[in-house]
Image (cartoon, rainbow, N blue to C red; front, side, top):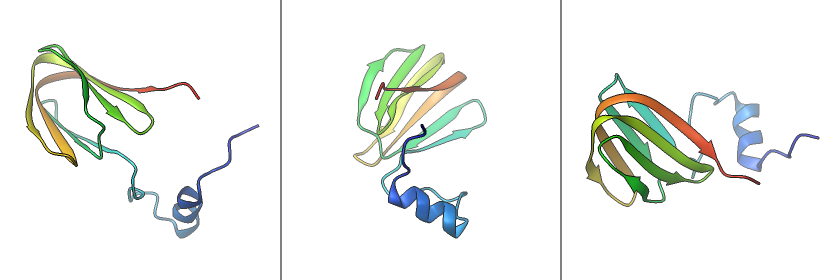
Length: 94
């Protein structure tokens, strides 16, 4: 049985706004292989030059690469730069 959709997800589906982010949902934007922007994050959980993990609503976003740096961080968004090899969403278990 599939889990019930949140009311906001049903609204977006019904209004055909699938390209627009829902309120409160994290946004992860990859710019080439040198920059990642994460909006609506919950903080950094792991940090090194090869891997930076960021907590989001659904789990963790793991950015792996070389020479990674957290170049900007506010309560709403953060920017990771360096050579990005992979970007992964690690869902937490329900």
